[in-house]
Length: 421
Ligand code: C2O
Ligand code: CU
Image (cartoon, rainbow, N blue to C red; front, side):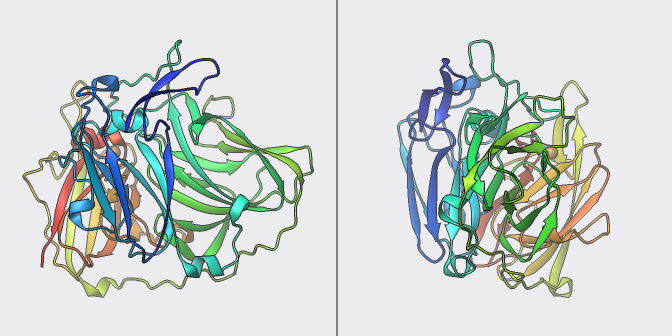
């Protein structure tokens, strides 16, 4: 980890906080059932870009890991020191991502570069025959603002969260990608600090959602658009076979008008043909629903804003993050229902660490099929309620839950639960 210049805007060198000099950091490939060990050396000064602390902590988002390796917000890697995280990978295959989780400074750290992908695979997924190799493409979507010198601008927008006017995919501004007339599997992460995207293709064509944060769905779901909150992942299969060679199609963000700079995400240029023996089976991974009757506790958390427009602070049940306060103590091996109520006029993507959960309902309605599998983040709508069911397995200790609009997280919308024996 260290500050590094990278060329994002041609001819300009942008200072970022990179992993081995790059952002996003290197993609880590891991295998279910095989432990991975990752060591980070912190080469940052005591104060880094945006005036943020040079101390950091790395969380593997979506991973089911012992609390000691979860990247607790005050379990810092100090500048000039190193730390090793051990990831057992005892969970279903899926796309995770690593990012900084420093108390009060996660927003600037991630904005300036501290995020990367972690692809976990397993034999079952490999056996399905999904598009793979050159036809499986990870895409990290982020928005940023640059000044005239090509430097990142970060303003700590604690009210609405920090958003940018420039879209980057895998660290490149609105890139293009040459593809063949065939199926591709796109592994998409919304790695933005606060922007929500509604993903669609510019020609209106449909695509299949085969998984979200917790891995494969039980069946593919065909859609023409998909909304993705910060930290959510979409595993999709799209076919370019209907597009003629020499033409292109764009991945776009229909959450904004087509004349906005954040509408075009990237372009796929169809440059040739290729054989395609990949398949999307009608049945993907078998799925077992958690049973609400098994829940031993119901807990409620209400999100609201305090302090007024001039000094906004976001809170759960009236309280901001305090590392010395624990708001829930679920018992190891038990199932609970957590309900999040939003007393504000904007969406909040609430993320829980440790095991994946399942969404029971949003405003009383079960989630659409795309969102009915294993998840780690749920969008709680304005003035609405989302309920999730979760089983606390394998590990005791402290884990976080928080809004994944990172400026909300930094401005107190975070809490912790302790899994007890
Ligand atoms: Cu992606 Cu608690 O984090
Ligand atoms: Cu929020």
